[in-house]
Length: 114
Image (tube, rainbow, N blue to C red):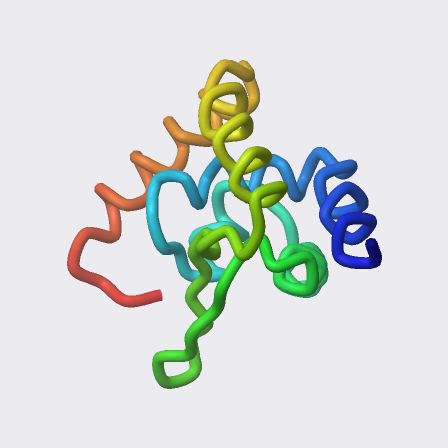
């Protein structure tokens, strides 16, 4: 029951929902999320930690950079919520604006690492 509460707590924040919507596009570096969300590293990292503790995202380190991706759902509840979010988050005007910003960002930095 504790993990279920963590999931719903993680999903109750607009910034965390925006992060999940962006990660639907694939793995992203913290610096990419910071640029799109226009938030400082500490804020983005705090939200990512919350999502990680709820088993919604995975992380990996490459050198000094941290990369995040959507985690494979560990339970039926996670899967149901992931499916619902995958269908509904992209409908949000904010998510669409974030995706446009992310696309521009990734095109501008193409072969660069953060």
